[in-house]
Amino acid sequence: MYLHLGQEVVVRHRDIIGVFDMDNTTISPHTRGYLKQAEKEGRVAYVSYDLPRSFTVCAEPGTRRRDKVYVSQIAPSTLKKRSITSL
Image 1 (cartoon, rainbow, N blue to C red):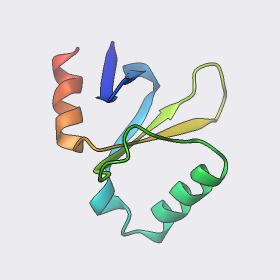
Image 2 (cartoon, rainbow, N blue to C red):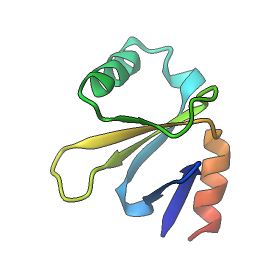
Image 3 (cartoon, one colour):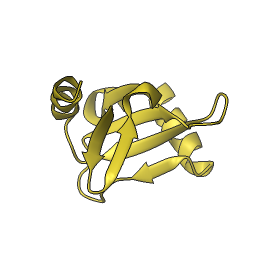
């Protein structure tokens, strides 16, 4: 199954590592450092340039230990509902 993250971005459920609330998680310097490093390495994809509300970390298909971060304007609670209804 797939999860629609916004605009024209869709990811497979089995590739999702986690969906995180941007407001609650970016308080931690560890999370900010992770996102900064991912952006520096070109692993961040912005679904929309609207106010970001969540980010989703996904394993890249066909690679080991690589992840891609999708920054989305959709709230994590909405993504959770979408995930449950698409199963």
